[in-house]
Length: 290
Image (cartoon, rainbow, N blue to C red; front, side):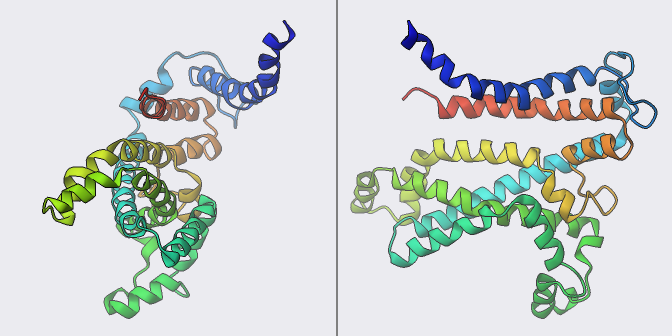
C-alpha cells in the first residue's frame, strides 16, 4: 500500500511548483482577460466585460495587427533560415574528426548566452559610432559605413532576425548532427554504390529519414520565435516605432506602459492559441509510437 502511493508522493512537490508558477498564473490571466483593469486608476481588477478586450484587439486595434504581422514574418524568417543554415552546418560537421569535434563543442557557446544578453550584444555591435558589425560592413561595403541600422525599420527588423538566427543555430545544428548520426549509413553507401551523387543521396535518402527530426526542430523553433520578448526588448524595444514589436512585446507594452492589464492579458491569450497548437504537434512527434 505504501509503495503504491509513494510514486505520487515523490512527484507531489513538482506538481505543486508547476501549479503555483504556471497553471495558477495562467488561469488568473485568463480570468483577467475578461475584465477591465486600468492599473493607473485602480489597484484591483474591475468588473467583467466579456469579450470586449478580445473584440477590441481583433477588430479595432491596428497596433495589435501590426504586432501580429511582425511576429508572423519574424517567425517564418527565423525558423526557415535557422533550420536551413543549421542543416548545412550539420551536414559538414556530422562525419566527425578531431577538428570537427572541437567546432561542435564551440558551437554551444552562443546558445549558452541568454536572449537578453544576445540583444544587448547586437545592440552594441550595430552601434553607428563604435559598433563592430557596423565597422565591418562599412569596410566591405563602403555605402553602409554611415548607416544607422537600428534607426531604420527594415534594417532594425533584419538585425533582430540575424540576432535570433545567431543565437539558435548552434543548438539546432547539434540536434541535427545527432539526428544525422542516428541514421543508418548502409542506405547512403548503397546509393553511392549504385551511382547516386551526394546530392541525390541526400535528397532521396538522408532528407526523408531526417524529416521527423526536422519537424521537431521546426515546431520547437516556431514556439520560441512566436513568444520572443527579451531579445527584442533589449535590442530594439520594439522600435523604431513599432517595426519590431512582436505580440509578446505588445502585451508587455499594453500592461506596463499603458497599465491596461485586462487588455494585456487578452493579447497574451491570443498569443497562447498558436502555442497550444504547436505544442500539440510537438508532443505528437516526440511521444509518437514507433
